[in-house]
Image (tube, rainbow, N blue to C red; front, side, top):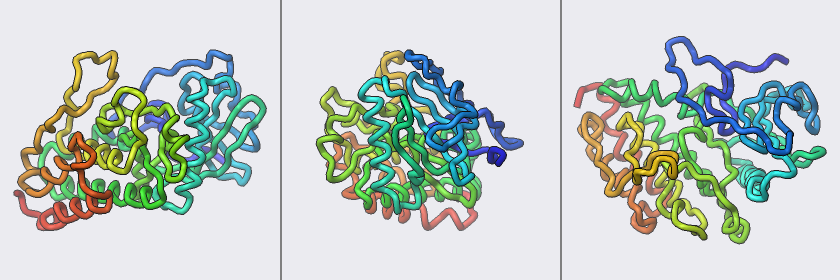
Length: 333
């Protein structure tokens, strides 16, 4: 079976896929540099081989002891295959196993990838999840920046769909007892038929497993992480309020068409931008078109988790209320 059309694998940036954007689309933002496995188990050696019945077709991402592939499953379908070297650091292996537990917990949630297989093959831990057709929000940000620069019925409808689909996906994930804990544009896939899928659950927290959740050394994207997730260790176990903050930070960034202001001048230390507090309020056409939206996002971005919206469902309902009335009028604010 030939490789499928452009798609997004778990946490695989556009440049890592080797795929070209559709005609007229913006080139993807630059990806993080790759690093090789110090134990000599690089992904190229697995291409065309066999990992527990899965055949790696294309290397999408390589980072030290972990590789992500587009692979063919035993049934002939396509999966995202993540392999982790047995000699990887203990926290890397713990996150790989944690992702499998998270996918199992969210197995009936339509807005997450499905676990296709997981186990040990020779000197590798492997995890296979359903291949998600589409592009990550990270890949689409240049296009969204152009769309959100000026008001139009299309830009208003596009943002409304993104905001409500993201809120709905998080609400469902939390009902399954799973907190994503590393929500960022690179972990959101927008697919055909206007679907939205949450991927890369290796840092997730799960109900009923507080000991493992507390011990997990999570990777967080600092640009969108809640302040409590960036506190000195030991950090509290992430709650749905942390995902609410991250979702609001993503929507805030989309509407402002630029990265957040750095919370510290040490770029090498933080690697990315973070929202400063208090959050700079929304202005321009989004604030004029949706007058309730700035306050809805401001509350979700409160540095105090207890001051955010009471639940993810409440946050989504507030978003729906703020966005429902005017985008369909077709009138300029």
